[in-house]
Length: 249
Ligand code: 13P
Image 1 (cartoon, helix red, strand yellow):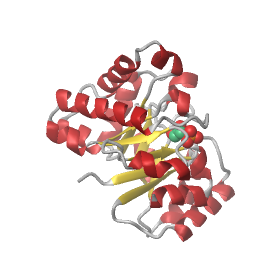
Image 2 (cartoon, helix red, strand yellow):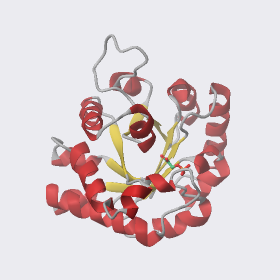
Image 3 (cartoon, protein in one colour):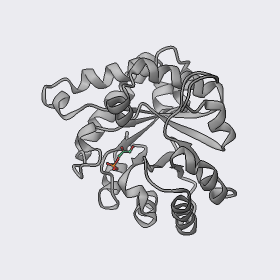
């Protein structure tokens, strides 16, 4: 039985004081649940403050990105070891905003995933098609290529451990959520692909989150689908009440 996972991707929002406040509100409202893992992914500058607030609770910390090199002269970058030492369990890799604005590719995401595992971080690997790709009928091919490229050279055990986030680019921050059928279709496609590349057992173990305008009023339906194991929440994670409503859904 896969444990559900709901993660808040705060993107480039919240100063240290604001992040502490939001984390406190989430901790206060969180009733605890064994069936769902909860992860907060604030910006790098807020990791320490959020870690302090969630210490001793079941809520886990994640980062939004990292660099694949071990250490050295890479001004402005953050390493896996740094994230681990800051208390991170998870790291989001290959988000479509990173692909779009910072030229990330499946190959660079793959290097990051391998490095994250070396340091005991669990990657949340993002894939998803653009509207143009969907409309031109290339959705399956695009998502399959991303999954293959990102997961290259990973062991079965690593794939069973990581989280894949299916985030259709056209649904991110737009208020246009994928229908339950659209989301379930791609989640099933990804799980089938993992079965083909690895095994049924790995496919049954890997958790696949949906991301893209998930809100309290649509979360329940999306999460009732058999291959949707959780959510990666952007906008709605910036408000404690709506984030917790999704968790409790
Ligand atoms: P929204 O929930 O704001 O659409 O963002 C989704 C997302 O990109 C999470 O990583």
